[in-house]
Length: 337
Image 1: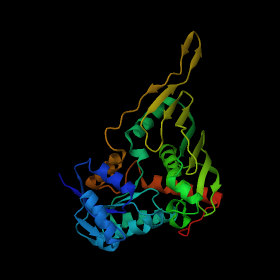
Image 2: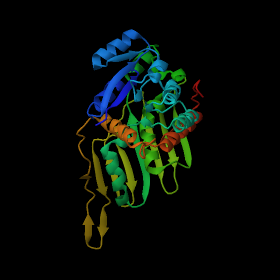
Image 3: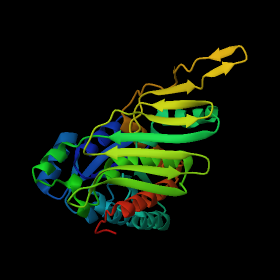
Image 4: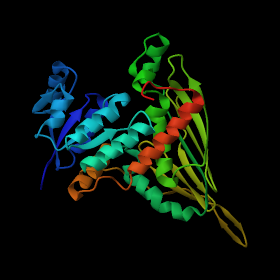
């Protein structure tokens, strides 16, 4: 079995989780980390038993030690760093959001095509086994009339924000904000299931830094509507629901789906009565949620495929086109635009 040698760019919590998921697949070999300072690179390398460290991304990208990179740096450098690595023949798994805007996503796709490498957005929601069950079960819902998703999580960084300390999560100069951080978890699955909407109507709260704190967005499709809620300044325990004429699917959480219930529509009349009792159809996750995206990415590399069918370039591009329009309507602008 051939090992796939990874370098990690970025040393935050998400990198810890992705490494843990990757190590549940025996093909994964972590050989290098790149950080802005040698001290931080050494600290992260010691924590994860990584043999090589870099403080220059270009040196890492050129290195023959590495086959692929996982990028978990601030949003505003995703495109630049991904393109640099692809130009040196490296396969790239880039954390969501793929880039600052749709224009940058197009540049990333062009670089992948030009260099004949694999490029995938690290969106865990759609590679979760339970998301596959949702896609398969949707045929039993009849005509689908609504998609509703909510991901509202009060950010610990918002307390600092209210004290006048502006951390990265609320800095538009880093292409950050609620829709990019957690709103994308409600939008990307919608795109993966239903494609691009015909109409977008967004409302939200924009903070004094220019970053959005929360949003509510309505989407119009041919025969259905969709609504998503997201927030970094309030919590919500609302589930996600796909509503059809013959029944509904209820997901506990859209970003990491642990349970899926099918609720058939109650039928009354003609001497029959069918109660709308939920039926659990989900499966327990036997591995880290991050294992599934790592396994998908390594499968693509092994099979010589440039993109995922699930986390496809089209889905990533459409999602950023939608987010661009949401930001336009809310008046949220990034220097990267």
